[in-house]
Image (cartoon, rainbow, N blue to C red; front, top):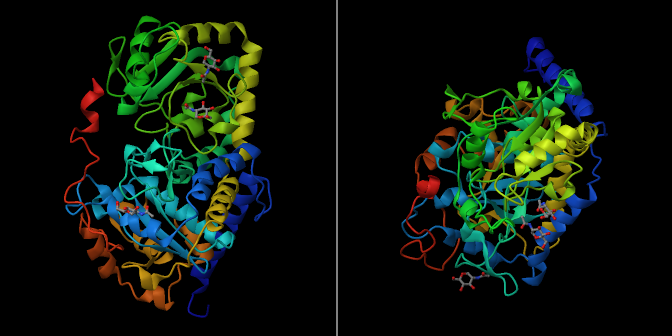
Length: 475
Ligand SMILES: *[C@@H]1O[C@H](CO)[C@@H](O)[C@H](O)[C@H]1NC(C)=O
Ligand SMILES: *[C@@H]1O[C@H](CO)[C@@H](O)[C@H](O)[C@H]1NC(C)=O
Ligand SMILES: *[C@@H]1O[C@H](CO)[C@@H](O)[C@H](O)[C@H]1NC(C)=O
């Protein structure tokens, strides 16, 4: 402490006080409380259930994650499963995203939120991987046969955290922490501005269904079952803007960069979207990263059907927290809007219930509680003691986060200091000091960096990717 000047000490104290104040206001709970919504607890249980059938998490299972990349290390395979270890309460990275992939908030938000969890709670010794890709649940990790625990991936199933999945996926769901805490319009920032959001009273909102998105139409959209109307499902991000064009008196839904009634469609900040009574949510490559935030806006959410879901979706009830669209027919949304217009009290009640749900169950401490619960459940299933001496790379997470704060592309991608000032980075410990900035930089510079922790030889070529880019079926 005597090395710190008074000024810097004041800054540290200020940041600390601000962090504490924000926690208290955002959560309404004491730090350390961990009381999950029953549906979220159930989600964790469902997601880890197959591990019991597999006899727990074994060293062979973890070593096999190395087989996600074949000999050629193609298709950004090293982005789909970042390997991690928790040992004596410290988190380590056993593989990395390449440099050029470090910027989007998915991985960074996850790392920071998990780091914070590890400082608030004692996490068990554990190994697992995280899918930081933007589609989150790759079909590689889908069950071929759930009952015999066969997955597409030839190395077998393994614990894999991701923020979006379908019923076919082996993964364990976690929050989309990057969207919750990193971006300017993050959930946490909106939550802090709730008074402002609530200033637009229900009767002042426009009686229009509003939606804005990027036109991402992923392969899974084309695999949705036929609608009860007999129509085939169609990518909502493409279809609903078309419908909006014909029904502009009740819909203002457009894909960014496209046109709507002759006007170019541009983005509308989330803080302005509460001006509409109804918000239309559609999924893209994975679950919508904006859905969590819509919940806070005090509007009724119309959610287009999807096979993808996030960690808390089970707790949301249809017609109580949102209304479904593209569920009975392609244009059932028109009937839904009609119904909402003629049931204004019910619509408002839903909007209020949704906001309350988000305020109560999705704030930062609740998310950390979710992480802790999942990690604890995974920890109970560990059948070996992990150790850094058994892995090619063991980079302390605090060290890596500290490095990210110095790198131009990542320095402002998330508010690291909220966590790092409070809990430290481990600087000065031997594990920290064994990695220089230059050493980390060098590892990241290799787009094919993939430390192998198995003796099983890699396949000569990835068998999982059909070779067709996923954007192929966009039109
Ligand atoms: C690891 O991968 C090999 C090669 O595909 C497979 O034979 C083995 O069953 C896998 N082990 C586990 C534990 O999944
Ligand atoms: C996933 O499976 C559950 C339970 O079997 C079911 O209730 C749910 O509707 C399924 N979800 C989707 C998106 O198909
Ligand atoms: C879809 O419509 C059916 C009735 O056709 C209804 O039972 C179901 O709850 C609706 N919602 C979803 C999300 O499937």
